[in-house]
Amino acid sequence: MMNISPMLLKNCADVIVDATYSLFKLVAATHSWPSLWGQSRVIGVHKRDDRADAKNYRPIAGLDNLSLCFERTVDPQFDRWIHKFIPSCQFGFRKACGTDDYGAAISAELSEALEKLWEVLLISLDVAGAFDKVWWEALTANLQHCGLGGKALQLIMSYLSNRKFKVVANGKASAAKSYYAGVPQGGIWSPKLWNFHIRELAFVVQFTRLFKYADDSALMKIIKEVIERTEAVGEVDQDLQAIVDWGKKWKVQFEPKKTHALLCTRKRRAGMKEPTMDGKKIKFVSDLKLVGLTIDSRLNWKKMACSAASKGRSMIGALYRMKSLLKPSDLQTIYKSFVRSKMEFGSLEYIAAAPTHLAKLDRVQRAAERICDCTFDSLVGRREAAVFSLVCKLLDEECVQPLQNFAPKLAIKGAIEGGPKTRQRTAAEDDNSLKLENKADQLRSFSIHTYKYSWQAQAPQILDKVPSDLKTNGAESSWSKVKSAGKGILNGSAERKKTSANLKAKKAKKKSNHKTQKAVSTGSAILNNELNAKLTDWIQYAITWNTNKT
Image 1 (cartoon, rainbow, N blue to C red):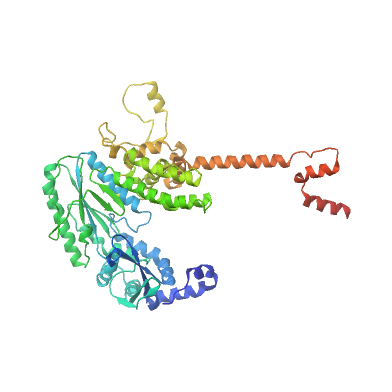
Image 2: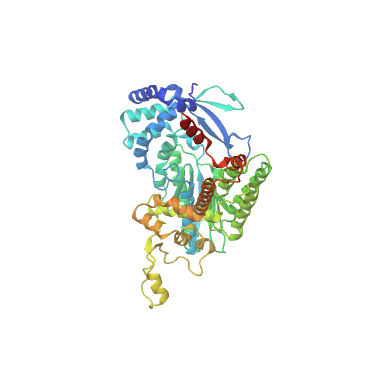
């Protein structure tokens, strides 16, 4: 397999751009995918559990770099067309959408349901093989049915045909093998084609809500009364059977080992009939994992927060052992990139955890500060900055619909209706800054802890910490323009930058004052020269002396 190095493409772009442009035009005109581009090197990346089991590896395809460049060149047009057919319940592989949005939508649904004393039945689904088992004939038929035709359809058909792969492990490669199903994991178009292939799954369910992230899906059923549990399980069974029938029709198989059920409830009365999928019972678990997020039955986020702290502690030891080998600045970079990023995954969800659990994360960071000999942004401030960032997206209406349903409404602080006229009321009415409206049933005296401290309940208090001028600019133009400034204020980085700038200004002023000092006169010419040597610009002195001499 011939492959051009990415460094060559980058450093020699001016030389090869004309030839590359001609090649891309030829591929588009002939709507034929080059055979060399259809060959890939597959590397198995271990996911979990037994390393001897091939099912526990994710096959990542290393594709030809020129083919990836072509895919990326055409991708904006292809994305605009295919995006119209992707349902709003799909969070994966969409612009400005990720696991944070997925987790925020599910956690908001769960916390609001439990706040109303309801129960939620949550079922996780996982497609076996996923990308590797996409049925080519069905995919191309659906693309044609949705209006893709002509050279574009022929190019996609050529892209999917005549594909070969080699498995690379321990420096050795297997013989090339052909395959006749699946899209390569590593391609630019592959995620979009996968989303399109399973788009109809959203219209199969009738009694439950579906949340999808790539090949991971979650079914959610809200139960308002305990006596409705049996009826709710029956409706969930119908949706699960409909999903199985749809999968058999389109050759999509669901992984039974990764299908689990979780009942989120604050009620003490336990016991519920196990749902069934294709005649097999689904076991209830005490906590459920969805795209790395751990959801427990009481929705207190204890396990997720403690797991994040445990991961951080395990890596702090390695950071300490490197202390004598690296500079403090390098240690800071390692902590931010590998330790803090791990601990902050899912922070929008576990922000509602108890303070004792969140304090474990702070202890890990304090240990890192002692090792790196510096002070980092507080984790509390960074979590608040993450909430502010999400609120900005919601106010700009940039989120997918399941999350956009939780978009807050803006109001003016001074707008108070009813009640007696008091001094405090008059002062409050004079405040014309913006705030987020609290919902009618929000933050009651008997609200559960996980709702009081959830991201959607904390959002109004967090927005109050942002200066009024920033909020006004965001409301008048776009919240994305003030997002960075607001995050900097909340996590403290803006204040540190200001302090650092002031220190630099003081040092520069002190240096300038030193240079403008008067020359010292001691009565001795030799001593005068020695004392005033640092104050003399000798290059300019030599130029002036030579000029005068001439």
